[in-house]
Length: 277
Image 1 (cartoon, rainbow, N blue to C red):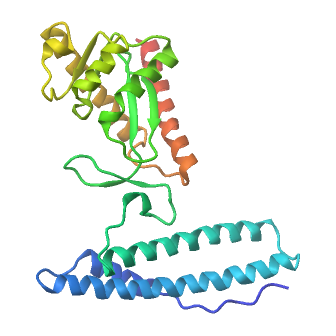
Image 2 (spheres, rainbow, N blue to C red):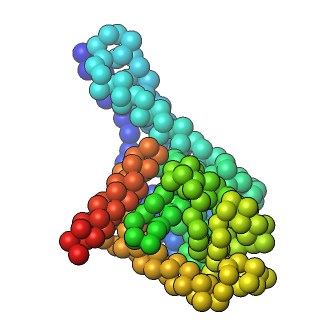
Image 3 (cartoon, helix red, strand yellow):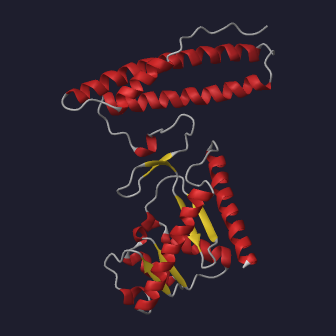
């Protein structure tokens, strides 16, 4: 026999109104009170929806225990458990941050109940985005030689040694020359790169380094800076033409698969163009 219907009220319109009010709050002294009152009502609705979900889960567990459940029932149960746990985390962090005024560490924040793996990616003065930092290594052939999808947002300055060591591991030797974005620049990273047998190293921003310290001549430095600009064009093509701007596949493993599918597709097109010329 099918499980009894779980009574519930659809709060979609109410939640959308509160979300709209939070997105476009009034200015002046009324702002803080306005935000808190709307957050309180949104949290009230969220807790009610959680109770609906918990009641549904209990009914599904009863069906499964009676032996009448099929595989789809167990799949639904696992998915519902994950969503309820995510909702509780979001409710908790919202109460702490908005109502109690606490600072919630980034490691404890849940940005999406559907994509729980997403992290905050801060890109200088540009808008904050949600997802994962992707570190790409390109070569003179315009091919993407390496790709690392970070589970978090590590500083660029911490990634120089790993990038060179990965190149050595994959290709058997360090690159003779390397060009990095400005965020990678530091004297320590220059010494690390030189210690790993990279002859010329150019950083987009010098950060106290001289050209003579980094490369053998100003001409080489200009060539490497121009090369880095060309790699930016490859990254732009990955985003525009190969869909790497936004992943449409769910889950952490699928996110990584999506990024690698973009990279492989880009490399296949680049190889085809080389063969046709």
